Length: 163
Image 1: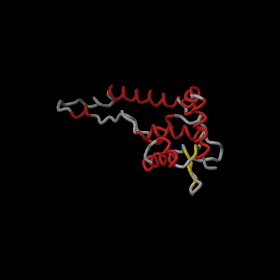
Image 2: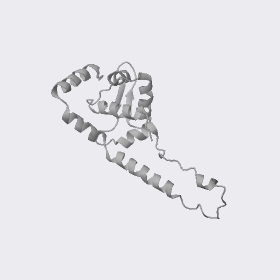
Image 3: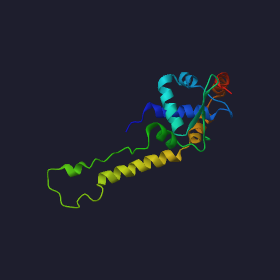
Image 4: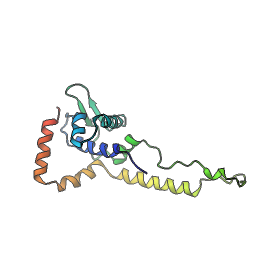
């Protein structure tokens, strides 16, 4: 399984938005420049986050995006689902029924063990992401941030935040 870059980008952008003061927004252009990614491509992922109820937006020259939920209430699964969709990581197509060997009636009434194992793995993966909030991944980073770096980030944010 491979998640798109959009998941990484979405989580990092949400992390930046989590530090905004109330009523403030960040433009898509600023988020793209800060992370060194394509503004156009990032805008598509931010739209997915907006459609998923993760972020809101303010239009116009003083516009930008902001988080709709508190970081403690926003899970990594929320972000992944908004960007990647909620489809299971495994799709069973019942190839076991395509065998040239004749099958008895009712032989395939129950899911195969492979399908069951993959559903179990999918549930474990989703449960692990559901347990992790945006706050839980931001806090360790903030705890290890050097004061000089923190001052640089704060100065940068003061320049780019729109209120």
